[in-house]
Image (cartoon, rainbow, N blue to C red; front, side, top):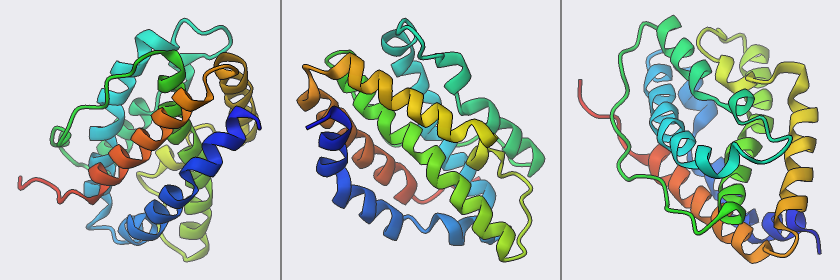
Length: 186
């Protein structure tokens, strides 16, 4: 079984639960709720990127800088006139090594695929796309960037699939907790 197949199989239920319970599309469709959701995403991605950088930036062909999502989230919040997000309820996990970090990154990179679908649904419903660039951060390169990530995951975790699975499970749990949290009072 490939590393990707192992990670997908192990996280399928958590992925479905997150899609069902996070209410991302409904929260984005509500103009009043959009800034809080984007702030929640930023409060997740900013510390996650800082934690992942020393482990993932040295990987050949990874392009860590090009995969950062925080610049798009900050721009989106500016477009919406929103202030700084609250700090995350919990810091990201501490990773035992590169394989676990790549498993965690699987969750973050995989969300870029779903983000494109979310934007298309907003557009189809006649909703504004203001402040939603994060959900299509790679634009037409999304498929190629996902394929590249999967190849790196396979190459770097070939003999460490269990560690990649552990990182992905931790990633889904952390994102679920961060998106479920009520926004802090201003």
